[in-house]
Image 1 (cartoon, rainbow, N blue to C red):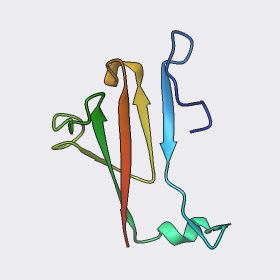
Image 2: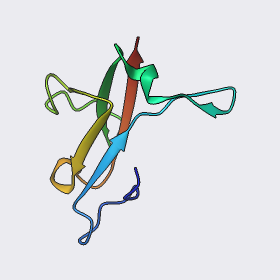
Image 3: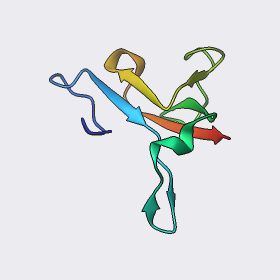
Image 4: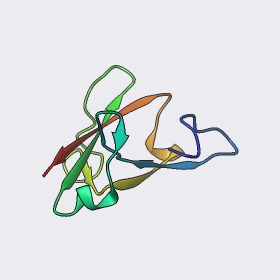
Length: 82
């Protein structure tokens, strides 16, 4: 996330982007052709937010997260299926 990991009064949204490394090298964007990236959001207690996105999942290599979507703290995970 080039905008940083903390949403503040000045930073109201950020973009999360999945990247993949193999043997220390960043794989080309073409790696994501035909791949599905599934993002999940967990609240500050580690509980999956099943109301976020569609049944708790948003898809896409990149997603935008707004301050309104995060209450105090959240953890985002991505699963890549190819």
